[in-house]
Every structure is written in C-alpha cells, then in structure tokens.
Amino acid sequence: ESIRYCIIGAGIHGLSTAWHLARELKARGTGSGDDIVIIEKSQAGAGPSGIACGVVRNNYFQPAMRELMAHSVAVWDANAEAFEYHPVGYLQISYDEMGEDVATIHEQQKAIGYESEFIDGVAATREHMKGIFSDWRATGVSSVLHEKKGGYAHNMATVNGLLAKVQAEGVNIVSDTLVTELAVNGGAVTHVVTSRGLVAVDHVIAAAGPWVPKLWEMLDLPDTTDIVSGGTTHNVPTWKFWALQEGTLDVDPGYLMNNDGSMPPVVHVDADAPLYDEDGNLLVEGKWGVYYKPDFNFGGVQGGYMPYPVEKPWRDV
Image (cartoon, rainbow, N blue to C red; front, side):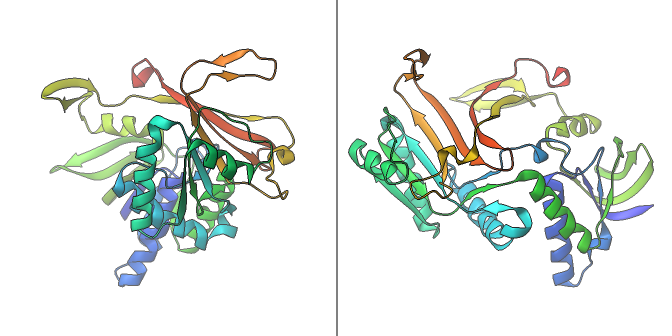
C-alpha cells in the first residue's frame, strides 16, 4: 500500500494538518483528502488533545507566535459551533515587573489588528477587574491585558469536530495501529512500518505530541543538542518534559460568572504578593501564577498552576 501524505497521530495537530492539507490540495487542483492517511496508535484525541484545557489566547512574547495565533483564532471563530469554542476573551493580569513586556505584547497585537486593551496601574487594574467581578480583591497586580478575542473550547468536542471535517474531506484514518519503524532511504523516509503492515510514503508528518521522541529515535537522531548561550556551548538533552499542574474544582461552574451572570473571560493571574487562603494560611510566598475558567464541560472550575520540569530521561517518563 502507498500514500502521498502519512500523518502520525490523530490529535489536534494531526487532524488539523490533515484538514488544511486536504483543502489546500483540492484548492490547487493537485489532489484531495484521498491522498492522506492518518495513523493513530489508539483513538482520535486519546492523548493530551482530549484532556487539555482548551484555552485559546494570543498572549505570547514571540512576534511570530502572535501572528500565527491571530490566524488560528480566526479559524476558531469561523468554526465555533463545530469545535464547541467559546469566544469569551482572555485576561492576562500581571505584577509590576511584567508590565513593560505585557505592554509590548499589546502594542504588537495592535500592529497585526488583534483586538485587545491594556490597562496600566494598580487602581485602574482594580477598577477594570471590578467591572467584571464585583468581588475582585487580588493584590500584587498592576496591569491587565484584556484580549477581546480568544477564549476556550471543549477539547474532546473540538477533536470530534475536526475528525468530522477530516472524514468529510475523504482522509483515511487508521486507528489502533502503532508505528514501529520509519524506513529511510537516501535521507528521506520512504516507508512507515506499522503493527498492521508496511506503507510506502512520499511525505511524513510527525504529529504524535509527547510521543514524538520515539519517532526521533527511530530516525537515529541525537539524544543531545548543543545550545549556545552567552558565548558558551551547553550540551543538553534534546527532549525534556514539563508537567502541567491542571485540574477541575468540583464546584458549581456558575460560581464564577461575571457581574451580569454570563461567562467571563479566561482569567490568568501572575502576582508577586503572598497568597493566603480564607483562613489566613500562607499558600505561596513570592511570585505565583494561575489561570482558571468556569467550565460546564468539565463540570466545575477548571484551571492550572505553573508547570515544573520532569527530572528524568524522556524514556522513563
């Protein structure tokens, strides 16, 4: 069996790639979804794509990333119902040390036509936030970047929406099939070996998420990478995992609606004041950050804290 385009992984990356590629081939008159196969070791969305928070934002420091996300948000907006996307906006609430960088993000968002508002100063920040949540009382914050676009999606519903679009384009999705080897000839992958047989390919797209290091290893690529910083070369592991600290509080999702009882923007707070609970117990001393949103899909208030590095080789994760 042979195929022009073989995509490994049926998460957001693989499905989105297949959808856009099929449409582009058709638009150019050079092919269609029939030229694409997705190989998935389990089922679509079985990995991180099916359980991720679903936040859609443009709060990134790299200009290229912001332009890419502005493009992506337009796709979310155009397919909101199919992807169960909620364009409620996004709040980046920051402490003083971050203010200049966040202001720069706002200026660059304006330059690409991405609608947002920057509120600067402790008093102005408090006033803006009280206009959304009347009981707002956070300290240690002095600015808000309020992205009027963006929001969040129900991730598994998004996966299913993409799956339907991909299938409508004629893409073949082969589930419960593990890629076991990538056969290379002349510096290119010519065959994909799977648990169900061999596929001759013209092009391979690795969309396997956290399993990508296994594909890297199949290609005999290096375990370490040289990084030059400050004139010094550092030899570091090519792959290093970070663990997200995310979850859902089992409370009524309506608990954190905005002042008029509707869905608020996604809230992301970075503060430099100590954090105490209602009984006055110290939870975090120094800088901390958290995001949250009421989420009726998860059945509570979903959010997360800062990720931490996993201090073990990727093969042991």
